[in-house]
Amino acid sequence: MTLATKLLDWYDKNGRDLPWRKDKDAYKIWVSEIMLQQTRVEAVKDYYSRWLDRFPTLAALAQASEQEVLNYWQGLGYYSRARNLLAGVREVCSEYGGKVPDNPATIRRLPGVGEYTAGAIASIAYNQVAPAIDGNVLRIFSRLFCLDGDITKSATKREIDRLIRQNISDQYPGDFNQALMDLGAMICIPRRPRCQLCPLINLCEAYAREVQDMLPVRAPKKAPQLVVLAAGVMLRNGKYLVQQRPETGLLAGMWEFPTIEVIEGDVAAERLKAAFWNELRQSVSIKEEIFHCHHTFSHRKWDISFYQCEWLAGDALKDKACWLSSSELRSVPWAGPNHKVALWLEQKAM
Image (tube, one colour):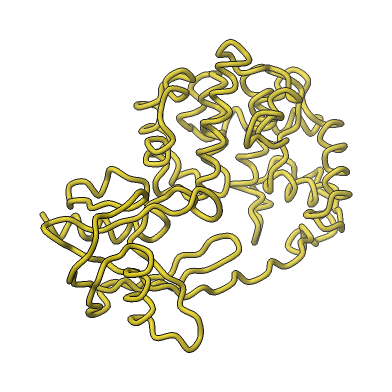
């Protein structure tokens, strides 16, 4: 039996029952693949269902505002994914008659769509023979063929692409790609792979050489940069002062409680008080710390303290800042851990 035959036979019996596998709708597959980037399957399921309840079609999403889209993405992180998905869907509606293209190269040109996502959409929705190479697939093929090259390097990725094209099922390329996703999630896992359960055990060179635990080779990641922040939570007349982040950069356009970076030698309370006045023309008194947490992004880690603030005086707020009641805190997309604080404040008000 060929690699594809063994894999597809296993997938027929053991493939995961996932909501985005109910049909071959290219839009739904697109949404699921974008959500699944950097996010666990179990965490995506509820978001996916809620998303499709609100945006069941390409046209429904294309007509939505960016702020509403970000609000429905709230909690999934990596918000550029949502912005690119919205931009891509709008492009499909304007340039392709509202139908997702079936050519991998054309799909690849849509905003936020990489080679993996293009291959997944083309193969699953349209049965195109196209690889969908993600971390799972790189790991599986580095073990199957005992590749000692760094899987983050282009040369190794090209070699794995060549091997997949040699072995992919011409008849069922979408199932082949999904089978690899499931095999990597359930059997050929990063640490201590469950080789005795693997349908490809007799084809695996790494298993034969007893080096499966040593593969794949990957350069170590750099530790995220620690950034210390202080934020002010100010309640006045039943409403909280919030502001919108800049339109570019990390968490662009998201909302937060007024926040400053604390550098070595700073007194957080003094810097925060000065920022309220310099940026918002609000005179405040900084009280006790009420919430503290860490939040890790791909390249940085926030250590953020939230302080209770008392309003003393101030001017009318300008653009990018406003007052929100407890019941309105869910109406905006929050930046990182600000969402936790907003939910906590909402619950306190109940």
